[in-house]
Length: 72
Image (spheres, rainbow, N blue to C red):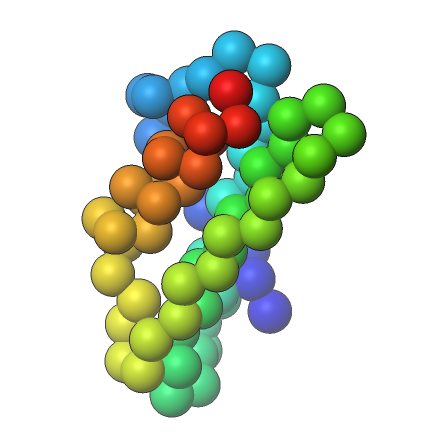
């Protein structure tokens, strides 16, 4: 089960793009999953990062920002 990631910053926002970022709730299994839904008009992108142990936060956030820029 995932919960809304309140730690995800508001910086690097792109006009007309909505993003919904989630982090897997604890207790986690052996694989940690982070995911984000990004909407731009009628297009929906899904970014998923998973890793055994802990999925790193910075590469996930960078991927979400880059996808926002591509859709913007």
